[in-house]
Each structure stands twice: as C-alpha cells, then as structure tokens.
Image (tube, rainbow, N blue to C red; front, side, top):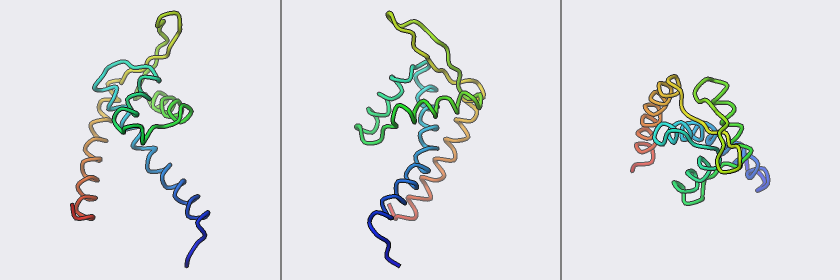
Length: 120
C-alpha cells in the first residue's frame, strides 16, 4: 500500500534516528579511545571531519549521548579551565574500553553482513 510522501519522511526520520543513535555512541567511544580526553565541541568537530559534515549530531543530541554514556559508566566528565572558559572534558573509562571493543566486534559483524546482502 502506497503511503504519502509526508508519512515516508516521518518514518525515515524515526528510523534514521534509531540507526544513528547507537552508531553515535560507538563513535564517541572510538574518538575518546583514540584521542584521549576531549570536550564536547571537539567531539562534534570530529563527527564533521570524518563525515565531511554529512553526519553530525546536533549539540543537544550529542550532549544527551554524552550524558547517557556517562550515566552508564562508559565515560567520565571533568570540568577544566580552557583559556577563560570552563569546559567539560570527557574520557573513556576502563569499562568503556571493554564495551567499545565489544561494540567494535559487533559493528564489524554487521558490516560483513551488510556487504554480503548488498553484494559489495
């Protein structure tokens, strides 16, 4: 049954949000694992860099992800003075490193399955 373009647009927005949510969390852990301590703006700039600006969470979405990862004990945040400003800097915890490795294995498995499915 054909649905209106507006329905498809809403559906895609919802599915895109669900898909990207876990990937964003994985990438934040990856950035912190590779780069060490980073503040939110630097993390956002890293998303811009790796995606040529095509896949960048909003500031609000990014801070929700950071709060969630912190609540789970995967990252920790600390206020530091940078210039004349206070910035919250984040680093990956030992638990975060373990979870990151598990997530990396899962991502690789999914990449393999997707490649097989689309024949690349």
